[in-house]
Image (tube, rainbow over the protein chains, first blue to last red):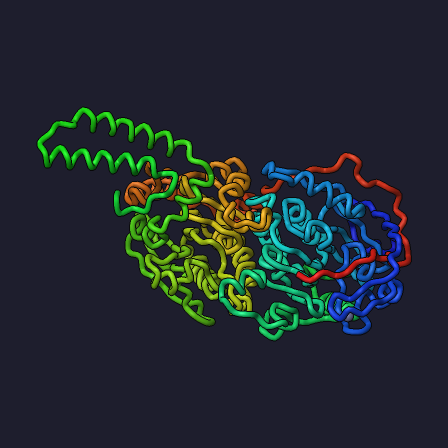
Length: 290
Length: 345
Ligand SMILES: [Zn+2]
């Protein structure tokens, strides 16, 4: 499919540049952290990085997720060049950022944003990556998410966010906390105007990300087994002086307690999102898909 | 003064005060004249106080912000407003006493006031979860704010919490969702919102009452994404290094004013708000009114826009020079993933 065909129905103020995908040397084997089963990487990849033995969903980097979710794995990336600074002159932050960038050559920060299509439906997407700085939210993550929300608003497109995060970026202190308010305020505008937001929790989504945009989907989905919560298990166990059950804060636990619409297996994720998008294309309004 | 809790860094001053008191007693009991010595020591004490309190470190402010006898939301509500009528409950589950709220008048103007509430003693603290709300607390706050929005009343919030309560039942009832919803809904209210950080503003539990057109801080209050203790235990695996973390984290009112996270600072008496509640309340009331008067003429749309702009501009980043302008070459096959072991949290 040609790019211009893909977007021929839409008008764009700017055409974001498409980012080439990276070539990653193949590892040979993977060992499941849940059940210990060893699998060939190729087999695991074919299985969308889900353990064939126990169903454990391995964590994905942002680009892997994009490859699985968007049509032809194509993303027209926004703000690819945006990167973090060290506003607090926090001890060790610059070095840590540099180390994270070197560890993840395809990522400049913990979120990738842009637009693409899912089963032909144009969407604005933001995909977080736990492998970059534990997916923590600092100024860049907050700004990119906010810009993605604003883009969806302006272009009258649905918004899809895959979250994964350890929480606030401590090294940016108060500025990272304020990203929670910034992203949520942007959602207030977008959703208030009728915009559709589908939020997908992936493993793990905790703290400041869980307690801001990620929980504000019109539809809140999660992958099986994904850890979702505000406070960490250890802190809670210390506070209440009790051992918590094994399934505490898992997606299934959260659904049981009324916090999620659906837990969706990775193999069904794209189709589920596609169905939701389709459900919103028939009515008039901002989230009109075509 | 003797009944007050003294912080370690205040010890030289309290020692000196004790010495002065002893001399005075001695003079009285023995009819001796120490007036010269007493005057000299009092002079010295004053100089020491000025030096200490004018140049307080972030860690010292943190200790003052956390003082047990520091005025709480209810103290300020009683001192700043009239006709306070407390309202209870979230209409869903419970009445979380870690949050108080209700109606009151400010210079005759009806407003909605809401605040985190620490306990005054151990029993009270247990009932109030040390000022750390459960979801029902945030939802109670939201209900009162929605009520204020409906009846076109300004909203005043007092922020004073170490953070949302870290408990299993809080998680089960949607702690994240409750905080997130408050952030979004506060952004959308068409009435003026002024927030004041009066003690410790910790994390999302603080911010859940903090999406205001104006955010003020008491001079010795602190506000941060993670408590200095938490940061220290992550950074150095040692929570007792909180003082060192406090220095690095930029948590004081002065820092936050520079980062344009807050709009104004409310002066405290020397040594902290607990030394003189009436003085602090008076300053707070002046500043609060000043900001409210600026907001009152604005339309709901303007207020929403003003609030959006306030938070929209927060954050620092840069655009890398060598922006990735490589030729588009989307590959058709999916990426081969790295060899990874998915880690447990
Ligand atoms: Zn397995």
